Image (cartoon, rainbow, N blue to C red; front, top):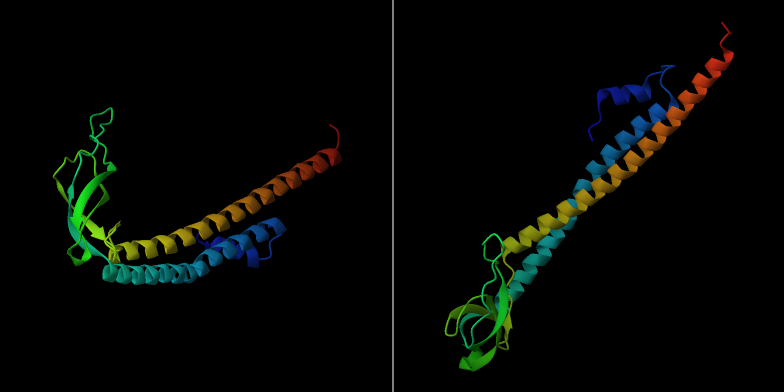
Amino acid sequence: MKARPEIVTVITRRNPLIRWSDRLEAALMIGAVLLVLLAIPFAAAAGSGAYAEGRERAVEQAANRQETTAVLLADAPPVHVRLDGVPLDEKVEVAARWTGPGGLIREGVVTVDAGMVTGNEVRIWLDALGHPVEAPVTDTDALSQGIGVGTGLWLGWLTLVATVFLACRAALGRRRAAEWAREWQRIAQNRPAA
């Protein structure tokens, strides 16, 4: 929503053809544009906070997780194929064996791609106790989260402001149409018979 020069003219100029609803609509548009622009710093701050939080989580997880190799003890279910012949990228859980912290051999369930067979090696991440966990959050993940939060908040605010503005504009349009109808009716009643 960009304020056009005509809008400012509608608000400030004295013109008998400009109704109060035209002035109100112009003021609402300027207000909506200002509200959307003023929300940018708040959305950026929220995104920056989400990024900082993600970075802290990435540092903490990188310090407490280690990568190792696990050997599958069973076959994973076969890969499913869509009707058009494209294989689905599915993750499944399969029994595996790995060496945990302190050199302890452990067995458990790990998440792998469908179609893997017994004896395949997969890279997994372990927590401090040697249990399989998700890979640690990366800086890229934290950045994506920050951008997503900031952009999402701003777009949500933009949608709300635009919805309120359009609802007010529609109400003003209906009121103007009703005023025109009354004006034409009054003119028709005052018109001399031919």
